Image (cartoon, rainbow, N blue to C red; front, side):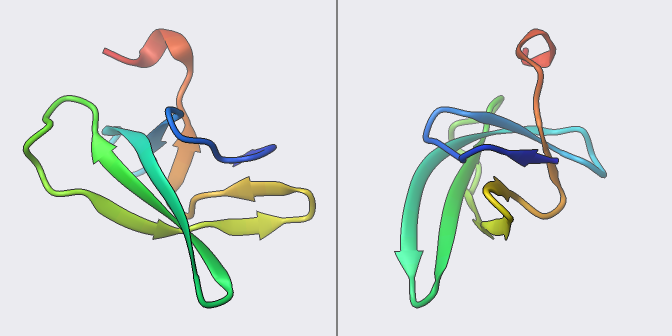
Length: 73
């Protein structure tokens, strides 16, 4: 699923496992944008770096879908 624009503080759900992740940082690397994701339930677990995909005017994270506000624990 694509969002209009990925922003720090958004919550995304991993499609295959259903885990939720918080976007903690966005940065540019070469010609791409990288999102740093932290699991919402455990602050001590390692963070994920995911390359942001552009789909027209929208952005998305491959393998992730935007989480609904009522699904976050």
